Length: 498
Image (spheres, rainbow, N blue to C red):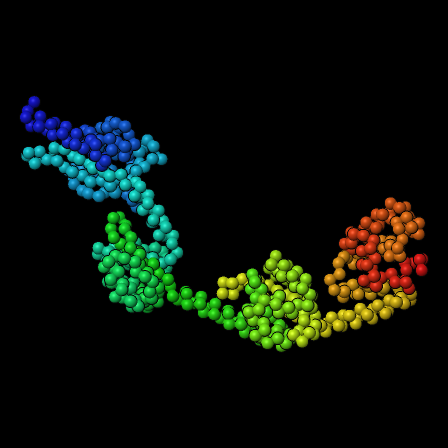
């Protein structure tokens, strides 16, 4: 064996001993592209247990492992790192995603570089592939890429070493009208996102020191020659081991538009609130402190504003019935709105006003509030009472009215009686009305059965039907229900029972 061959083998054994324990993966090839040896780290990065599993040579390797670039494009076979080093090329930082042909579910991301070792005559003696497993880093970067692209806030990333933009998200492109090619690789001097910044000296200092740039207004030039007012902020970060600055933006035009719309809405509400002829009150939902009232409220109830604003509704005590006030706010808290609830309101001078109260929940300056509208129905109630009184007078001597007319008059009286429970008299059948009339005379079921010549069970069924239809539960409730509606007075009894 020649001295040169012995020297080569000795060198290789020494090289293998040196690199066997390295965390970087190392694959050694002969100049003829045969795979001679690989350390344990390289085998692990390929998901195999022995060197022969990599393939006998570079060609066999390309059939056992599929490679893609990070942009998901397939790496051509002649561009595989093992093919390139087989041609004697030296390169660094080639980033590829490797998948085993035997198990497509497993993949790794390698950062690969090459080394060509020459003999004493300058001829290639050993070809070396050195790889670093950057799978975890690539996964984190992929997550960042997805988050950055999905972020609706306009943003771009500038590399601080040369002040060139390396990433831009759709939000920035949509806001400005730039294309990706017009931004990526462009210098911050060409596309100055901090142009006309309100504190440009501070911006320059923050860039030099690579610290956070606080929010400030700036003017952003657009590709059509126009400009856009924005709020911009900068956050330092590292990307691919390079110092960068993440710029994020808020479109002032959108904010201004929203502020104008909100102000106009508030102005319309305030004008409607002030000019409404109907008394309106706004109070806090939690404490019932009066936040605002309109002029109609002050005029109708006779209170000066100083005795109302900032005072709780319980302290003002303008709702005549304390229990009615408690029930009203309990219902409002539960349902969020009320529609025309009859409430009697007391003026400052002690006079009483009948009101129909409607209420709803509103948010004012991030505070949950109740808005109460008081409709004065005193005149309407007086008219209704007069109508009821007239009906009662008519029904005192109803002998000459037909049954149908009496029932209609009773219904009118029922409709105009405030908040009476139960159904309508006309919901009852003729026989059920007769039974109700005899109940109002104080007759028991057996007596009703005898009077109407019915079986006791039939009477009990009729009584149950009456209770169900009128939403009552006892004979006493039935009597009260009928009397409140002016039914079955002494001058009128069911046919045949006068």
